[in-house]
Length: 320
Image (cartoon, rainbow, N blue to C red; front, top):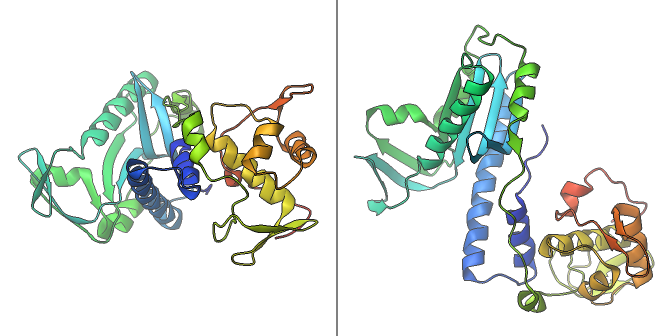
């Protein structure tokens, strides 16, 4: 199973946080996204362990079905379609009279809102594809330190962690209920997929001035290095990283932060605080990125994502 990716907003906040570029609200948002992503990855592990053969699992997808909506996890199988909205909450939650509370304090937010929106969009999508396909939508409360009390039928929309294995094992439902093969249905569903309609945050010129520049140690986060022939060695923890990989990683970090800008040699040279030559930076850009404009002031297409997503399978000549 392919590993779930962080959203571009999440990547931006993480890199900005690592370079001391977040205010208090940004740090709170990053904490919330870290917690949510950890919960979604935890559900992925349960599905990988207990899920069935032939299941098609979609993670963190956007669909446009009478309007856009985000879906944490969608599973397509012969028994139908299953949608999960994952919550990694802790504490004592209760739902009564249409109102939520946590640890006895009222909550303004309705946790079922996303579930309702997902159900509406999935129903719209399936009316267009095949109304006979059964679709089920559930909230999964994945955290072991979460408790929940609710009125009657509300419980049917919720899967608690201690019931999750049983729920996954029972999803096949015995007899196939699709009139078409799973692969055919998936192609129909994928036609509704869209890119996230909301751009990631932007780093304007004033904020960019405050961001820490230089090569950041991949292990300890410090910015002091000894430049060797084929490696950088961190003066804080001693970690050695291959020079090509470290520069490529830093270019990707720059691309995430400045996601509205093309990649240019001079800009990246300043971002790296002059630790490597412009000639070396140009060689990395030519090797790994698509040229947008040639010439003296060449620019390269900025994918706006971190190295582990863009170049996960790359084997570098020199090891860390």
